Image 1 (spheres, one colour):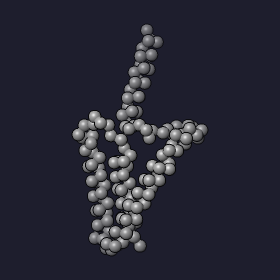
Image 2: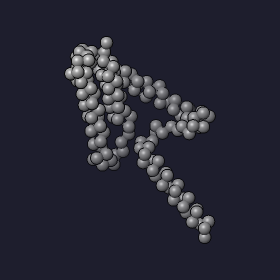
Image 3: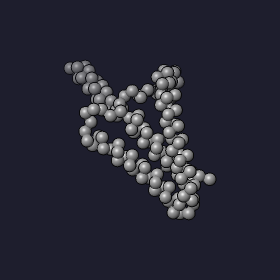
Image 4: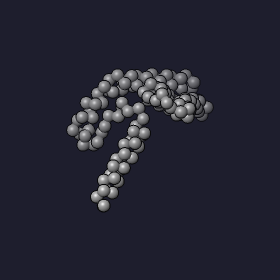
Length: 140
């Protein structure tokens, strides 16, 4: 049997790698550190997958072939899942976000926003300023 630990770690690493490099959009005016974190994170994930795979053999739980087949199975499933989510599910996001149950649970489609954290920060800051300004005029 293939190593399930190896399979999971390689699935997570490969899917994260694909997500970081193909799905996340980087702006053209990004600083060096903004560009570097993606490479450091990818290297860390691949290192973790290799270390888990190596530990399974080192601790005598699996053979190299079981770990290799687990890694291949996890990598192939990660690629298949990434393609499925990109090509099949992503075009459905706006339609799913418009469902009444999605609106009830405040589910939004943010797939077109390149940096959701920065977007949320700027929108929240602008809204807080507007409310503060309105509150200030009511008190006078």
